[in-house]
Length: 374
Image (cartoon, rainbow, N blue to C red):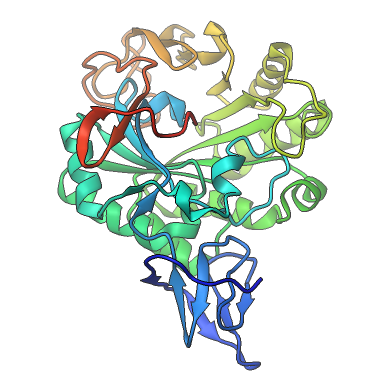
């Protein structure tokens, strides 16, 4: 696709000149090769002259302060708030995208808020946020911007969270996650057929990202699988996915099963019944996983962190709201002293299920702008 490049652009990393004269993007496994004036499949990485640029650097589709549980992350400073933002575009083509109006956007006017990395870090501090989340669309495609924001945040003691599909090449992956403190990775299914037909991508690179994060970094990792009725919710697939997580990553890695709602190009499917999430949780725990959660539904059992040894309820949740918290500041069960994996500190009360849209020109001023997203 050949398009005029409007607005500001920023020099992109991770590309090389191909023998045929095109420039190849080396950020993700799509390996887009571009002639002058063309954009990649993600829409936001483009060629102009003899260089590759990122067209959304410093521009956001909106900022919101959310509970960290909404990302979802249940073992990463529970009860704290997170400043969330994204840009536009995506390097996957999910037919069931729940954020399609942002991730599939070809309208740069959706990028309503401009902010430097330093302004975002300052907004997080002023807003009392423990972390900043790169979300709504996949931060892989705006990696240069996310890295600069993460560096500014680290200078101010603010953590960084990537909410991602994990579709990324090895070299940029190493550089990107050197600046992240936590990640929630969408494991969209556990078959290659689903990935090809429903997302236009492949399963293997996502599994590689998960192995890398868990075994070669200090990034805290949780996994989310959106269960779509009749598409990726069979007992056999759920058992295979859960067994792989337990064997290849470890039984300590939290797994979230969340409910689908009909959207974008998959409006012929029904909403995910709560019973499906409960069934998936039971299967995953039978495969040896210790921390399995249900999401996008009211389910006190499925939202609660239990001690794997004495089975006491340690953090009781309803959707994104913490109702009771009993972990020690160091993340231990107060009943049997079992250490719960994650990142914990002294609990100062929960932010709650609130959502506060903000504008960076006035960091805590409420605004109707900003997406209602996870």
